[in-house]
Length: 312
Image (cartoon, rainbow, N blue to C red; front, side, top):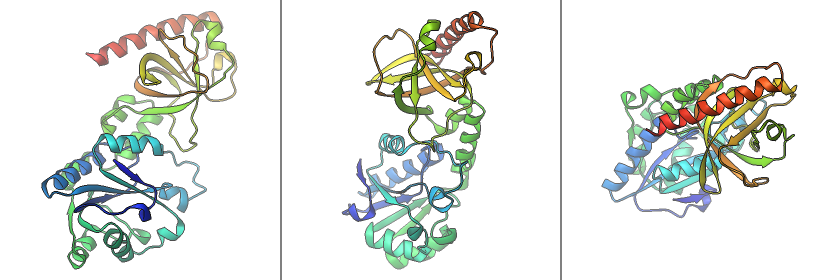
């Protein structure tokens, strides 16, 4: 996959089959669009092009919206789009000036003059341009004037995930990993840098890697204990992840830390990726460290069993 960090970097391709959108999460609805995009490109001897935007438009249009949380960082999204077969990814910087383009300007200046679109594939009820004034009907009417055709993915093909980004975010906020995975079509992940903690896990016999998530917009799932797989330097390890304020230890800040099974390497300063598999339990306050140690042993057994079940 070729990645362009501005529309001006794109030098063209053969018979561009194009879609556009933020594609946060690259969920099953997005995947339906990508599959169709690639089918058409293969059939018509063309190449698939995805025009995306960064930062997320809501970050620019509503900068004070502290509730905005994203399912994927930019790097995660790029990796997923490559996995699902996009050939050309254009990441157009989204600015207030860009947001003021009318739908006709967007069609003429971006889709036609810059990308030279031959076929445009869009999701059901897709809107674009200033104040979201552009629609499928507008594209269908305008396309032939500029030499491209338009296909809308039917409602029945994406309706079950039409609001899946919202559903995924809600599921993750509730710790419902199964529902999130169903709509994503892949594991939810967190990537971060391993930082020094207070070594409390080591004292308890369950050393943890404390993870610093560098994007403040990345959605952190609900507080609790999770069965996870963790990628360290290209190798996957079983483990259990804790998200919470460590009430038994009188913690004051949200902590994200993973205990990797059968692992004893130094990972400080390295970036690791956690793949959420299932939630084990909610976070609770115990009456002392002995109770906590007993529960951690039970949590590890639960994690091992859950991970084995998923591998069957």
